Amino acid sequence: MTVDLKSLQSAYAKVAVLVLHDPVYLPIFERIEREIAALEVKGDAISRARAGAACHRAVS
Image 1 (cartoon, helix red, strand yellow):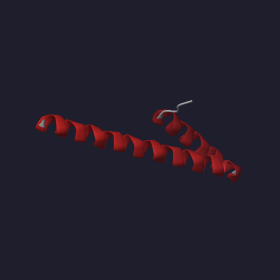
Image 2 (cartoon, rainbow, N blue to C red; image 1 turned 120 degrees about the vertical axis):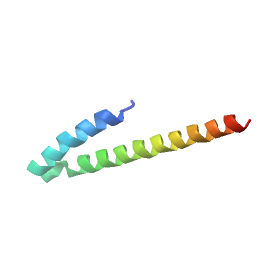
Image 3 (spheres, rainbow, N blue to C red; image 1 turned 90 degrees about the vertical axis):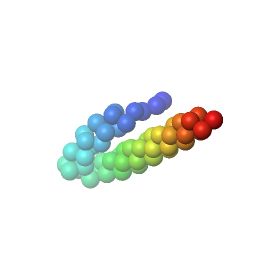
């Protein structure tokens, strides 16, 4: 199952409200934070790879 960044950001906002009402939801909130960070890092790496490939094609 794949989850996109937009869905995670939506869940993050909703769970943030739940955490304010009851800290029992904090582990879920923290998990969503980690998942968002992981997707952002992956996206950055893919962007860097695309840039590197474009430079390689330009020189070749």
